[in-house]
Length: 408
Image (cartoon, rainbow, N blue to C red; front, top):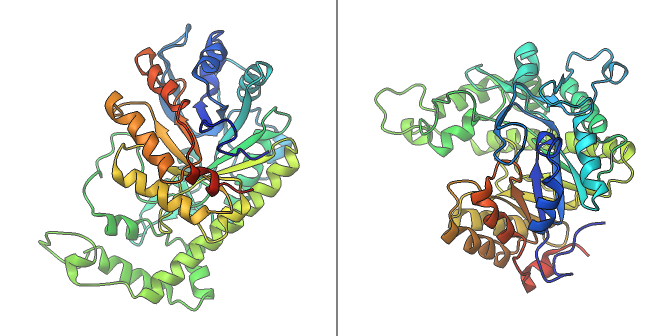
């Protein structure tokens, strides 16, 4: 059943966690219950991470060395596929997600399966022909290209395997589309080097499969790639800025429109097939939520909202971590785009740099902007000094705007 903001007078809150936050910590469930969150989203398939565990009684850090499926990797499910997820050997459980989900569900708390689809450096490095390439033919190994059929089959199987035989009522899809230039990788040295316009251009996938689709839509791929390269400032020297301003070069609007249509079509196809697989594998999962954002050109864990995405899911979740007016505007635009079709949710964090004096005001502003659900990061990463912020998120009252923004 889809969550309806306003039924209790308090905005529903989904708290995020990793399997290792739950397993081995007998206090996790009561701590979560005390916070008042409506549901716990547990990672069922996730990218690499080095995660602090400040409240766990048995460890203080978990090194998830690669993207992994937090379920048994069954040979029969992946037979014949080049893309096979790693097992989560760093968790002391044979079936980490299911075990963690069962602990939470048995305590009477709803569980969401949090699934990251196209983000895997391990698989991109092993299969570079299936990863995103920019207009300089530079590989983004962390980003599997959703235009390729093998990547779509991988995502479909990953999602189905993540949820089978588990007590989840909701499935949350992250990276259900294309990742781009921005990536918080090891020792990242690209921050601030390019303006937003250039990052957008460098996020366009120019792999052979994408170029083939452009061609089928009447676009000359070679000319398009040359225009993209020129607009990044590649042909200038000593320019003070990057992007189109650096050279006076602009990519023709018709080229950009075709490229965006191709990207959105790939995202739509991926989403349709993943949702179909999830509903078949987990008929008890009655709600589908999608990490996205209102900027149609956005890439990454929250790819740009396509024209039909809000019709296919129950909840759309926008990134609103910074406690700024820009985040509130993201929430407002998402609520407007999804109005009458899906609940608009805000992905917020209680971790630094969030502060006591800004966090609650930020949540209130998001709700006033039309947000009907809060997705809270993170139940395991936040230490004791941050738990009052987590609790604050579960006390935000609804407004008339959030009630009218929900799907009936």
